[in-house]
Image 1 (tube, rainbow, N blue to C red):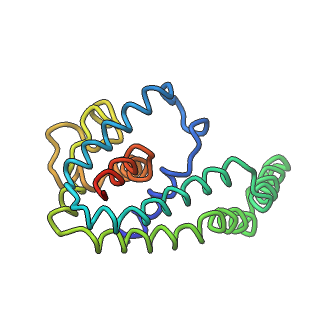
Image 2: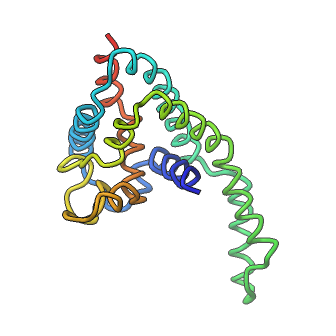
Length: 195
């Protein structure tokens, strides 16, 4: 269950175009917050050169997959458009949305993410195998501070003072972490450590 949640979070965080996210801050602010968060994660992990060399191709594949997913999400999926149009038409006709239409919508949504979900899950397992248990814990509990989020309730985790376990399991935090771990800023830091 946890792995599916993480995979879904990675897919959504990495895939949503900025225009699909309400109240997006200016690009310069997003870039600065992402770089700060990348520096905080890099410092918390303190990867060895060997770990960095092993992680780099995984992170690059994850970033490429996230970019590909963003591009796919920016284009309308014909199956999803057809299912949603059918649901709209059923509602306009005065009836409820039929079970068949609900199933078609759900099926179309699953189709968008099914292949990528498996790829992200495989990458996650490979990456976690490279990290030590202490590094996995550091990744789970690192405080992103003024980086990706800007205070209580933001994607950097739970409000200040919340127990560590809550911060590590926040869905918003997982989304933010996925975005940072596949960012150019973090990839650059890992490349520097790999030398």
